[in-house]
Length: 85
Image (cartoon, rainbow, N blue to C red; front, side, top):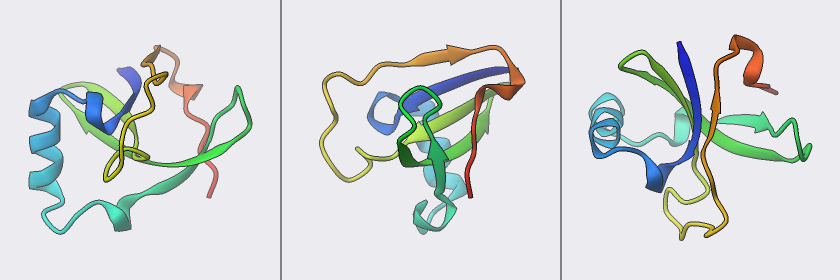
């Protein structure tokens, strides 16, 4: 299974629609605190599976503007996500 880290604004429209359908009351209760293994900083995100792809969706732009330096990172390894609770 392919894993992708992506900001909410950069998600394909079909994935956004699937998330809105799966969480009609919003995703706020589904967010997880996740540690960036490169910088060591924490951020809130949503893990969502769609069409054989696991998306780690950074939600800092869910209701805000997007950081212009935001980029996608692709992972093939199952251990690529570092979750902290």
